[in-house]
Image (cartoon, rainbow, N blue to C red):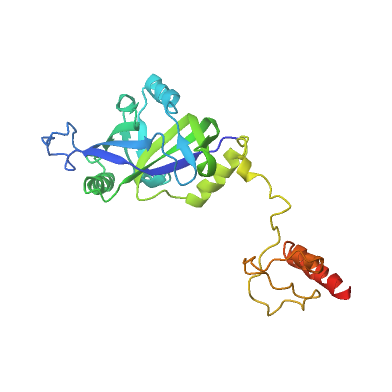
Length: 272
């Protein structure tokens, strides 16, 4: 099953041309009216979902757009159902992978003959120019992905590597990623198809010496009366008065056990 997902990230909006279609690009950006240059996906950056887009992930989809001669749609905040949210496009020759990530030069429809479409595109372009919008997102299908590990020792963590995309449906500016809960469900479904990496030794199940029972929450209002006597008080760590007297052996042994076992051992010692 194919799962279409979206990914939003802080990006670098490198330049924005004039918003007014009647203006000329004389600001040194080299961009015409309604155009913008931005990095819409960053390589080597582990996002809040634990995903990392790998260099080369866009190679096949960009080649497909070039072969078809089709533009990449620019859609505001993934609002696919709103025809006016389809605010522009990226020509296939204006999208490329760099060392930093996927860089595009997009053209918004600020000169659309449809007034409502032009107004929508002009407003989004104005927000980009004012840096009030600083995130982009893109919709994609996964072709190749898998789990990897980053870091060492206590800092080691799992990362889901997005290695190759099967489709790039659109890119577009957004305030933050939309449908975040839906995307999390999609990610869970996709990740279920990939085996986990080998776990660290530190992640092994607890040994018998480690407590596995939950700590009390301090609220005993509805707790049943205890059936075992309380454990004897633990020492304060000062062993200046330690003794090897056999008569103290049960208590010494009890201090090293869990509370229930210690209490039982204390009862046996008292009976003796």
